[in-house]
Length: 212
Ligand code: TMP
Image 1 (spheres, rainbow, N blue to C red):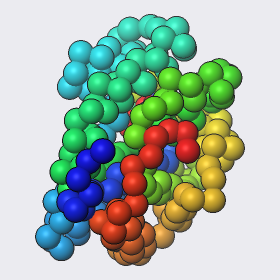
Image 2: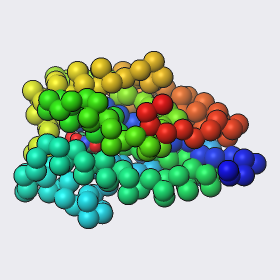
Image 3: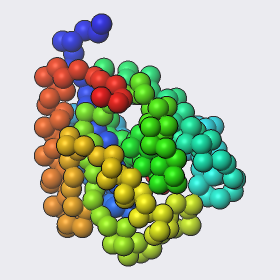
């Protein structure tokens, strides 16, 4: 058991469809928390810098083909390879803002037709987020935002299925923010829920594991 006098950081996860605005909101939240004097870092999944991440990246850009189960397990492995580092950072007091996590893993793979329980299984034992924020946008609206890039999943029909998967995956603990609001309004809502979460973790909320 670790020394609890040292307040721990919070694990904050942002989720949503492609082009929902997660990436720019996570950098705004980073600046906000840092500006308040918190120790904070941001990261994203997939982390394309590792060798597993490079396999994922080449799959996403259609340079390689993989069985649906195989790519699912690679996405999960990519989180497992960061798990101990993430735990160490949280325990040392650093708050982590994470752009996509296990929910993306389950939502995208189950949208292909894989069994949801099978998809959830390899995530068991990863760190559970202290806060999941879902930036809510319809697939149609997301597609209007300058269109999708060339990556494998950036297609309207597929994003519709992902939206349904996210919907069946979410629970009452998720903070759902309307991603079509003005950027500053989203930013403010995010700041509120994130700060509240950081404070709870500082006050001793314990780290839990997936799936709580
Ligand atoms: P990115 O655009 O946020 O880098 O994510 C790349 C794509 O990978 C995105 O379409 C979501 C998808 N994805 C999965 O299918 N499974 C996962 O576990 C993660 C983290 C992302």
